[in-house]
Amino acid sequence: MKQKPKTSLIQLEIDGPIANVRLARPDKYNAMNVQMITELIEVFAWTAEHSVGSKGVLLSEDGTPYLRVLTLSGEGKHFCAGADINMMRDAGANTPEENRKDSERLDSLFNGLWSHPCFTIGMIQGVALGGGAGLVACLDHVVCKPEVKIALSEGKLGILPAVIGPYVYRRLGSANFRRHAMLAGRMDTDEALRIGMIDAVDESLDISKTLKEILSTGPCAVTAAKELTLGFDRWNETDESLRLWTLDFTSRMRGSDEGQEGLSSFLEKRSANWKTEE
Image (cartoon, rainbow, N blue to C red; front, side, top):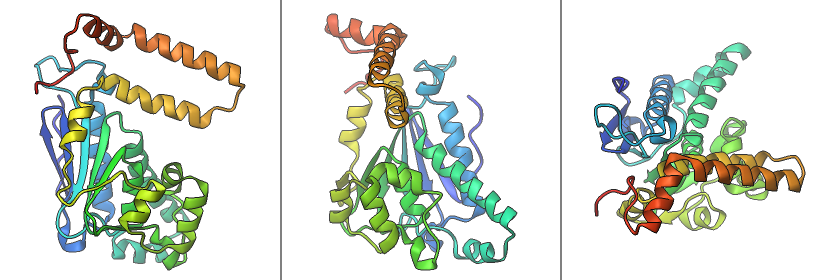
């Protein structure tokens, strides 16, 4: 494996097939500045490159497990208070070209998380505002403490959640995204659960059941599920062509090494080779 990126505002710990990423700027409520954003982009790219979904095999040549799960959390009182105030202040004095470059950096951050080949899990406490809410929207499974508040807060500053918009829109749907982009207020966990912004509320942020479930699932199938969903999202051809595409997709998965292992293990009444020991 390539050496993992060096970081100072985030922490990356590898535990077998699990990558644990933690925002580590608690004195600033994990607000994202250019350095933190850059480090996150690098870490998301490195973990994606070293995932089973990317490599197609469970282990590297030296026997090191490739990654199957990525967790994201934040140190201290809050998960992420959004963009650093100094970065926001500087944006007002930037040229259009400089603001475009900043926006492109943010887009790389959110798309890197949203399209990550691993199953991604968020453990959220305190607040997730603006870009913090964008991170939440990009995750596959989100567990929050009961007191969490989430906001598409950009409207309070006279701007809009445009860069995070595609990811929040996909999570919430049109009406809920529009309403919360206009309100820009803080939603509690009841509202966040109701509209699908989060998936569970747990004071202890226990993800053990979710980890057990995902580690019993074919890791390449996890990655392919994202490809399948994106295909449905973007489909603009006929229903017949969509059915044919799903047949091709199914045939490809069944013929893959993982598909063959999964079917064989089921018929032979044994655990598939990707299942971890109980």
